[in-house]
Length: 207
Image (cartoon, rainbow, N blue to C red; front, side, top):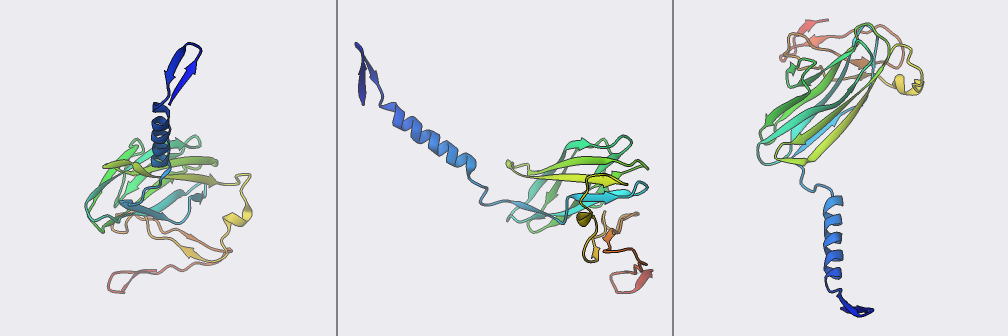
């Protein structure tokens, strides 16, 4: 339409088009990814560790697409108590603490372990690590994981969240084929624990 202001005529025909374009842009920005190429499954982001132990977080990356994907794992935040260090672990490898990003290629239907080890080194405190996982072919498709690490007599922790209501045994991490692996478990109360390790044939390896 044309609108007269004073002696000037201002053409307004373009405004509906601009509004329509803006709405399209907003819809595109807010729409979720309808066909993700991967998933990242894990149990908890709250990590509790003794001052003389190693905190661990583990999950599994799944390629749910019909083709090969390359997933990047980037440590965006690494705010730790003085003396602590953290390492990104992908597959059977835990990388040097200075490595902030790792990429792994997965064929259709494949999966791999992914996690973080936090070396406490005898120091009590708290820490935060943030992981950003994304498909290198589509960097807008990403998963953010915020890890909270606690040790010792850290104040402000809900006691009900520290002690589980039932026994929980987490998957071995890193991969048990590593020279060293961690068996992590939670108990509802203190007690004697007997762990028996079997090989793939069901034979007892160690108790």
